[in-house]
Amino acid sequence: MIKNSSVFSRLQQGENVYGLLNSLPSPLLCEMLASAGYDFLILDLEHSLRSEEDIMHCIRACEAAGISPWLRIPQVDPKLIGRALDAGIEAIVLSRTENAEQVQCAIDAAFFPPLGKRGISGGRMTGFGRISLPEYIDLANRQTPIIPMIESVAGVEALAEILQLPGIGMVMEGALDLSLDLNLGPDPLNPQVWQALQYMADACLSAGVPFCANPRTAEQNTLWRARGIRSFLAGEDRGLLHNALKARLHSLQQQY
View: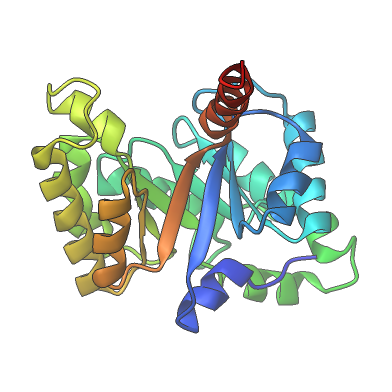
């Protein structure tokens, strides 16, 4: 049944939270990442082809293992947002957010009237009727499930306006795509990108909205923590697993 997000509750209590982008469709992997200690897992639909049935299995695995299931979508799709929240997704990550209109459309899809335009379903998030629809609507409308991901110059420029909207639980950065949009090539460590990330963090701090950093070096991790950032994305499971497997093979090969 619907419940308050443990991720946002922990942030409100001053704790740190850690998440991972999930590109490898596997309920078993969801359980493994929960066991590793991560707090939230972003099931990716932007760059991964996966069925809604697969997403449903991953949601159940996340719920059973105690990790919050989030979903990154390629564009604002009100019907998809509604189905995802009905299924148990706790937060919707909006890839390449570039204006307040996109975010407002997502908010409308995520909240019930009078706060939004979402349609009602008495399915699994009500415990199939164990809580009343009025109680469910009240609980759902007290969540903050929309997470814009800023990955372009247009998104950076629109961030101040975006942060004025209600229903935003967090802002995420996409430094790699931002570097491409700045015509710097795939260079997320470029000083221009770092400057833009600092602006994002400042804007979020002023608005009282958590900023989720994706530290790419130990130095960045130290700097973000010194700034008081408490939300961290650890990267993508596909790359982390691939690098770990390569490193293990290399260590064995070096013994001969």
